[in-house]
Image (cartoon, rainbow, N blue to C red; front, side, top):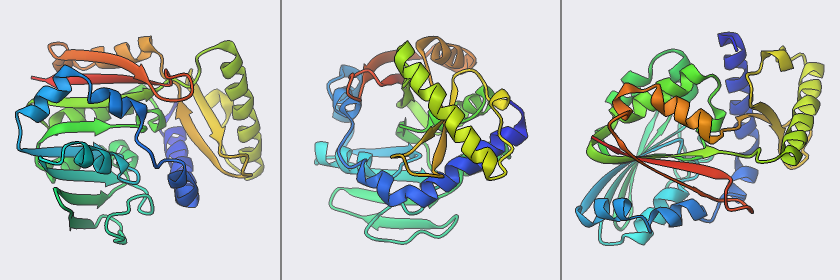
Length: 277
């Protein structure tokens, strides 16, 4: 995939979330099962048992439901949440309205929120993620849920992973989910058909994205059968994730934990939790 196609897919997703923020957020209200499973892991609990204050970076935070979940689960801990997302309408913090590249601060009972409206993928394409990360203090916990499948190309995924590592303190945790929505031939055929239908519709609207431009395991998915609403998604399997992690030298000495959770199958997301040295 070339850079121009990658930029077109990023624009496609930005438009999707801009047009469907309310509808999407309405389907994303309860905590993920994977987050609940995280709380049962010894390595995760050890981080919280050793802290009275915890600094957290949520990269692509959506509607802040992870922050609400975590601060409710650990009411004795004072949290500093640094939350970044491109979709301003998804970030709802004390009913504040976000302006482009504006920081909003808010304080609740046991949590302080610092929310940033940035186009993360645009920053990655322009190699500006270092500058963005430097504006945020290093953290004890860095999470990135429901985002990596929207990152086109392995190079941009590696760039994003490297920047997340730079945001982490020593002995912190980095938790990432990878969407594995193609698990058998039936779901593969379903999403291949969806991709062809979406590309045909996009071509009718003068889009230059073609099936030949996509990388293996790339798909274009619709949303609730709504005409004209499409998003780019990459399907991850275990081998791809291992290849990604192995491409980052600094991760080779990190202790890594893996589990699956979420969706009707209970296996839709592959979680990687890394203890950063």
